[in-house]
Image 1 (cartoon, rainbow over the protein chains, first blue to last red):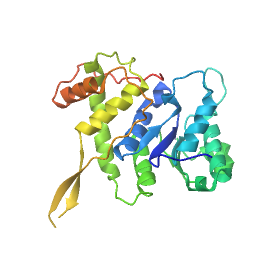
Image 2: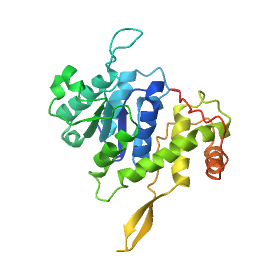
Image 3: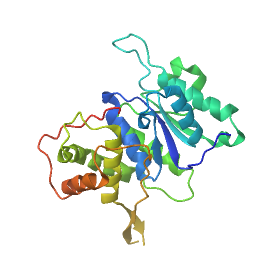
Length: 210
Length: 51
């Protein structure tokens, strides 16, 4: 029987190429600052596992998911589009529709570069698609509203998260340099650990009416 | 109405399977050094590799 043991885990289905990294950092930051746990295929290093099996396990265990279809475009090298992200969105939708009854409560937020995505996946017409225009700040508010709307407690305002993310991005090159890394050397695990320590060193303050 | 501020610091959760090259102590030290104003001069954005 499939389980969703961690009620605060968020499956992140997005590109992992270098050009996408500013957006990926913003997604991770928004998830972590709100107390949720980011889960992605990047965390599993055992290459003997089939990638699709990892994806199944992540979708099964996460009640929330973030899907970014913005890189479903022709590769300059192969001249073919990349379909991994739409495929993983499809697996998520299938799990929600045909899985155990409690899977009906799974929730997702979908991003694309613009509304053009609906012209090549017309079956998703009717779903809300958030266009981010490749701007990291544009993913923060939708993720914040998506995750906080399901919680009984109030979250952190999106504008405050955006301000903190900008400060994190400013500090990141110096932190990596302090650790002795060249800019191209850090790995995904390093980014998450830096993010955790940075957030613990920079608590979020919000205005509170007295 | 006067406004004060309150601190919100949710527990930061990262997957247990994820490993960093450096220990939490080393990373905390680097984060705090930068917070205290020790900044590098190159400022080049890091590129995080897949594994």
